[in-house]
Image (cartoon, rainbow, N blue to C red; front, side, top):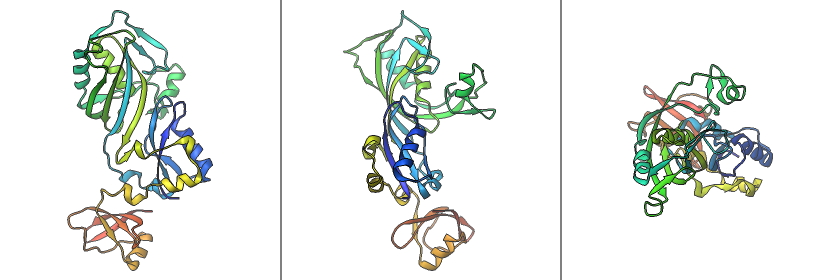
Length: 294
């Protein structure tokens, strides 16, 4: 089974836990994922099975979309509701307009410091291991980009003023590397009253959508096979060419071929005559070299 499997991850499990479950169901060892979700989070987890693990680098870098619930007035060491409270602001009083405009201010390019409780490596060690050991580390900021961010609820009529403990929901679409719990923390810092993540649900990741995902509890070997997204569909943003059998054999052995069809493209998806993805080819002068064979 080669392809991408969209799973609706339940809360309380790590992404690695989900991979382990699917390995047991399928009997396959070669399974990974395209982007982790924290145990608290639910929603779209994209798994890659078999040869699809080779295709991850060629997926579109479209933003990931999240539905978020956050709480004002309190910050925690994990930046979400599972952590130890660091600050509490019982005097918190934030207007609906201030919350809405501060959220909007995060739109566009920016820098974000990954949370201490994360899998980011610093000096060869995972940050969460350093944090659990009580050790500190200088974490360099990373560039992120937020495409869109909107306050969903409550309306201004429902809550013109937010106090400590009040919750709100927003939707955010952001680049790879965005930590939504850090976004909630940074929002609280800008508002001067602290904030933390309460609930997080991923709705989309690149070309994949939650609507196509299967709840983990409903997965069987048969459902995995039925719901696999072919590599060719996942890489449909690349120009494609159909290889005749002689060229197909050359590509499968890692040898370059001559193509007349791709025009100005510098990278193409090679298909066999049945439409199955065979390889990604890159232009090398007048020839096309396989850079990844599936």
